[in-house]
Length: 270
Image (cartoon, rainbow, N blue to C red; front, side, top):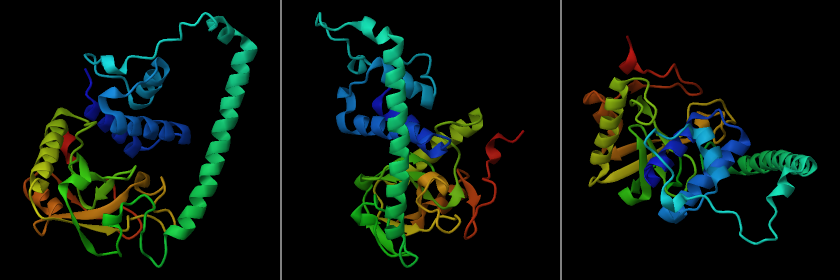
């Protein structure tokens, strides 16, 4: 049985990887919001389950939709006629209507996004519209952070409460814990995530938001770090990335002002 937290992690990983259409991205965000809001009381239809696993990948062999996620049954009213959905004209009309709605939604999202973006980036300071108030500050400032204000995605990524995208911790790269390329990386990824969880459990935390290493005008969009923000996390005054590097659970990863070198992933080297 796939737990809600595991399913949310897989959705977050799919959003981070990118390569999604606007519709797929919005669908995953909607599903994630349902899981966060309703937990085990979430109700998904069979079609929604099928589309979800089509995007994030099939569930593990031993995983089945929990009983609380059992697809909604069709209404039992005698006035309900499944045969009408088999009408080719009705299917075509629904397809065209859905296609028009998706196209219109994408255009509207681009227009609104452009307007928001033009008002959000001011004076070289990043003020993300979805960034919670505790993280909104001038570039380079450290702000206090408490453990309840964020979740840990893996060894180098956290997600602040109230945001749809994660925050990539800069200066290092940790092994993947969600979709590792080999068993060695899988083991190191779990250990890196567990170690980061341990470091922030009871420490005095500070977060410094920094610009991502992207071309000018792209920060906050999918063209820059998959839409994620960037920052540095300190536990008792020490950069958590330095700790993970020193313990062999991460490697240095230093980017330039507008671009990054190839991501170092030495764990699966033959």
